[in-house]
Every structure is written in C-alpha cells, then in structure tokens.
Length: 332
Picture 1 (cartoon, rainbow, N blue to C red):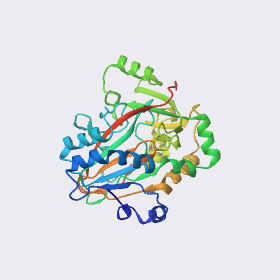
Picture 2 (cartoon, rainbow, N blue to C red):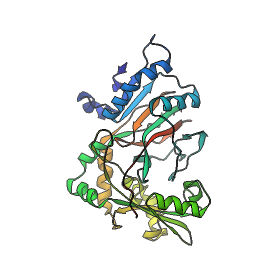
Picture 3 (cartoon, rainbow, N blue to C red):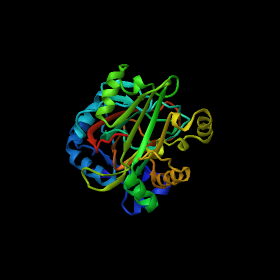
Picture 4 (tube, rainbow, N blue to C red):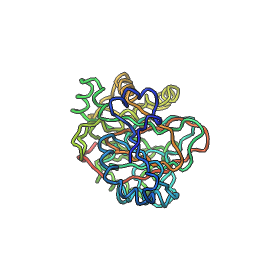
C-alpha cells in the first residue's frame, strides 16, 4: 500500500532517501482495493505508525470529495477537528473547523515552524488538503525536528533547553492580526481569563494589548519519547523577516514594542547570530514535494516543522488540526 516518494522530493533529499529516511512518507490507494474511504479506514494503523516514524505522511489517491470528505479523513485518522485559537496569522474559515492556510501574499515565504507551539496546548496532528495546486512552487516544505535538534550547536541547544524561550506579542491597531481576531472575542475580560489559564501575561497598553509567554524550547514527544526542537523561537524572531522589513520595524519601534519578537525564557535578548544559526539548521533539514489535487498531507506537529514556498497560480490549501497536546503552563 506504500510507494517510494522519490519523485516527490527535491534532489537534495536523495541521500536521505537512500538511507530510508523519507519525509513525507507516501501512501497511495491500491487499484481494485475497494473504495478510497474503505482503504483509508484500513490504512489507518499504517498511517499512524508511519506518521510517528517519519513525521509526515502524504495520502494520494484517496479522493476527498471537497471539504466534507476532508473532514471525514481528519476524523478517520485523527479524531475530532480542533478550533484554531490564539491566532498569529490571518486565516479564513472554510467550514466548521476547516480553515484556509495562512492568507499571506503568494510572493512571500512562510518560514518553518510548528503549529501553535507558542501556546500551552497545541494540535499533535495537522492535516492539509490540496484543493487547487499552484502553477509553480507552492510546496509545504517539512523539516524533521529530531534532526533539527541534533544539528544545533550543543551549547546553543542546551542553553535553550535550560532557559526556555519567550514570545512577546504587541497587538496594535492596523498592524498584524487584531487581538479580537487572535482570541476570538472582543471581550477584554475573556482575553484576560484565557491568558490566565494558559500561562500568558496580558498587559493592556495605549496601543492595544501586549502578551508574554514563556515556553519550553525542547520537548519530549508524548508518543515516541524522543526529544524534539518544538517552538516558534526562530519563526517569531524579528530577524527572520525579510531584511528590509526587519530593519524598518527596528527603526519604527522600540524593542519592547515590536509586533512580535522572541527571547530567552528569562526575557534576555537572543543574539541575532544565534537565530541565524537556528535558521541554517532548519534549512539544512528542509524537504519538499509538489502538491497534486486532492492530496492530503498528515503531519505530526511535534516531529516535523512545516513551511510554505512562494508560488504562482491559484493555490488553495485547506487545513485542519486534531489531537490536543500540552506541556507545563508557566507564567511569562
């Protein structure tokens, strides 16, 4: 029931393929093997096993029948879809708990990250449906977080393991996601209650809302027990933006007022060169594939980081999340 995904990944992954490390692992339907829905249900144990082994599984040929079929796939493989909360990027609801992928301009790259790793609770499993493939590029690249962790300089890695990391977000009118959208409410009391429950310090400022949250940078996977590099530290650091955007923001705002930035867990600045090293580690482990219509990518959110290439054409990817997981809640 499985197929070798060598045609799907970039040439740089050839050595990884030779060693048996495939990301994503491809599972296709068997001709004459019954309906796609029946084959999916039969394949569930294999999908789950390969997900833990490789970090991501690409389901091809299972015929999604639109968003309703996608929801059935999510429920078959991962259970009840989750609501997207404490948002950090613009998305639109397609139906129920199925969302668009991040609504950023097609010319922009979205750097590798693990969904909602800045929250106290995150989805363990992600699902991406290719409704319409792009004309060019537009892949959802992946990186094995076990390998990213191993690639990080040992001193850097252990310092973050000991100190954790902190994200500071400033919700300012007219810039980025409004706090009302991020927290799915316009009620300040509800925002404060949510933050209190989830280890987030909330401060109302003249410009809007500032939040701080300290999280762990290195986690233990709840199923495999492996150590993983699981955080938004690199993604949210101001230097991961395009150089001109980073320079403009640093000129416009004091450090404390940047829309989003990251620090060591005690609030100390992370040197730019350390974040550059982390970006290099992610890039070295990045693997890609080309979308085909009705593909479903299933990602173990703690074993694989995901990204988005720039693209041309009408690319439309639907997203759903399942299986909530959590770590220790700490006040920032």
